[in-house]
Image (cartoon, rainbow, N blue to C red; front, side, top):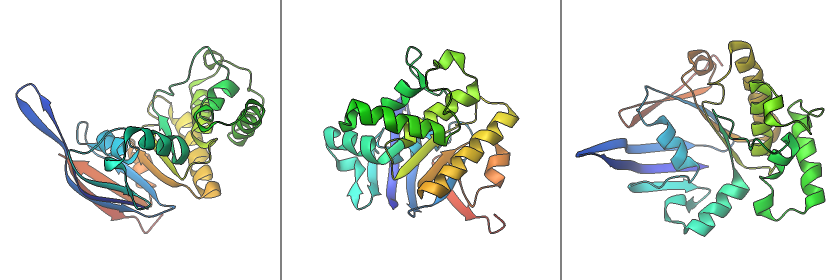
Length: 227
C-alpha cells in the first residue's frame, strides 16, 4: 500500500519557484487501479515519479509497504525499483538494437537472474501479451502497439508489486489504444497488481474505478461506482 503524507515538490524556474506538488495526501491500497488526470503542468507525471522513486519530494513522505522511499539511500531505492515497480512510458523506451526478447531480458539483469532463466521468463512474458511469435524482432520491425506490448512485458517480467504507466497510449491510434488498455487491465487482474496510470485520454478516465485529478499541485480523488 502507498501512503503519501504532505508531499510537496518545488523547483526553481528562473526566478520563479514552481510548486509541482503542493501538500499531497493520498492512499493507494494494494490491488488498486487509479487513473490520474489533469492539465499539462499540473503535477501528474511528478506524482508518478514520486510513486516510482524516480524523484524525491521537497518535503513529506512517500511510503510503500511501510518504507519511506524519500528517505532511502540511492542504492536501496534502486533495488526497490528493480524488484517491486514496473514502468511503462509513452515513448516505449526500447533499445533499438536489441530484439523484443532481449529488451524484456534487460529488466532481469539487475536482479542477477541467469541467462537461461532470463530467456525463458522473457519468452513467457512476451507470450502473455500476444507476442510469442515476435521474440526475435527488433523494435523497428514492429508497430507502435507491438512495441508498447514489449514495454509492458519488460515491466512485468520481474513480477513487480506495482505497475506505473505514464501516458502509455499517448502515441497510439484509437484501436491500438483499446488493445493496449485491454492488455494492461487483463494483466492488472491476473497478477493482482497495484496499477497507477497517468493519461490525458478522457475515454480511459471515464472507465476508471478511481480517478485522481491534479490541478496546480493539489489532488482530488473520486470513486466511479458505475465501473
